[in-house]
Amino acid sequence: MARRKIASAIGYNSGDHAPVLIASGRGREAEKIIAVAHEAGVAVIEDAALASLLDTSVKPGDYIPPWCWEAAAKVLAFVMNSEYIERVSKN
Image: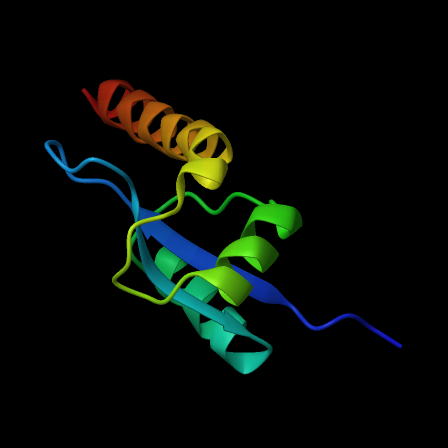
C-alpha cells in the first residue's frame, strides 16, 4: 500500500522568535501545498520526518516548537540559498 503524501509549509519573518507553520496536510491537501509552492517558485524540500512531526503537533499559524528548530532552520537556509542563487544568476 502506498504511503499518503505529507507536506508542510514553513516561513520565517525577521524579528520572529521562531519559524511559523503556514500550512500542513496529507493526501490531496499535501499535493495542493506542493503545487502552490511550485507555482510561487518556492523550493520544495523533501523531509518526511519533519513534515510528519509538524503535521501532527503544530497548527497552521503557530510557531514551530524548539525541538524542530534545527531541522526547520536547515530547510529555510536551503530555500533562502536557492532563492539567492536564482536571483544572482538572473542578473
